[in-house]
Length: 444
Image 1 (cartoon, rainbow, N blue to C red):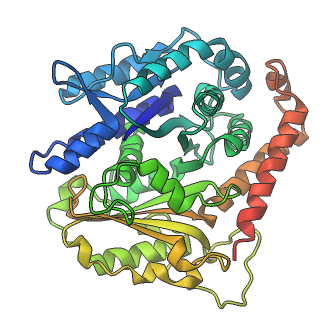
Image 2 (cartoon, rainbow, N blue to C red):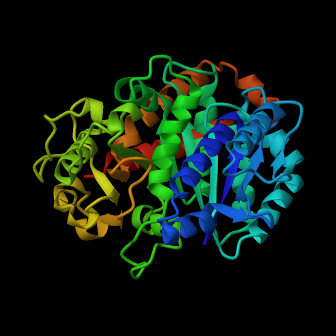
């Protein structure tokens, strides 16, 4: 089954290009015929000339980033984008969610839906859509939300997994918290699940683990693409009957998004290190899984910042509304993906501990395990954890609080009103996200 990726705005197009590059590189080995065939069917189609074209639609209100992504893919010599699979205009959305959602999205709806339709018709079977976007700007967030709505309208029975890049906490755009609130509140009603990467965390990964001194957005996008590839590349799952899974999005939803009130997914990958160090490192499954489990329960999010003092609380202990430093991260559901040498000998019992999970879902139902004996992206052994937990509770609460403080002083509200977003729309979005915060806070 095939996945159609929808790349939206500057961030979405840059992350998408890196993702396809990682996937194509990982699937090139001729000794992995079945693995490579499943991966290529999932993400690429083959032209009559034998070239690989990404199953993707590229959208931005300015052509520069799309042109760069298409040229970079073509120059790789391994794959490319379709010549007619993109749409751009001459004017951006001005970092304004309302401009993207209320103006540019509706204005170009027919053109975008036609591009998506053509891409879908090239699939033998459609597994679902992955819109890739930022939450901070105007096109990625505003138009991205509108296009997600269109996907659900036109393809109501298809899964939609939104990938969101969360902005730096120190700020990229003055109204980024407004844009983020409006994006998340609307996507929570539209998307089947929302997979989040935080720029601050990925930046620390580049600095502390990969030892990159001058960190660029390209470096950040490669880390995101590596982690996404670890989730989306072929694996054996409990229901795949000894073959590589053909429906990655559907099975991911089944494993993690079992309740409409809980849709936020966080990703952790181990190990991550500078490529020059990989050849001189050895990894064992017990060590990798011990570190990954502690990352989960302490909400460390990267191996370099594990808090070993955090332990599962007694059954009678309640949790505070917002996670404090050193507090325990309760999970609703976890998906553990193991790849590489001796994968079937890995002992995963530590992730079956019932104290990790909320009391109203048995641990044997809350944990899903996917495996592949094929090493991923140069790592002999690697583990990826996709978690539906309290991991994003603190950054979500901070974002809503900052946006509310601006809204209370009516800062920049007129910039949204003039494009059709009223103060009532803001209040509805705040109410929606406060409910999400409350739901995740009460997991215990």
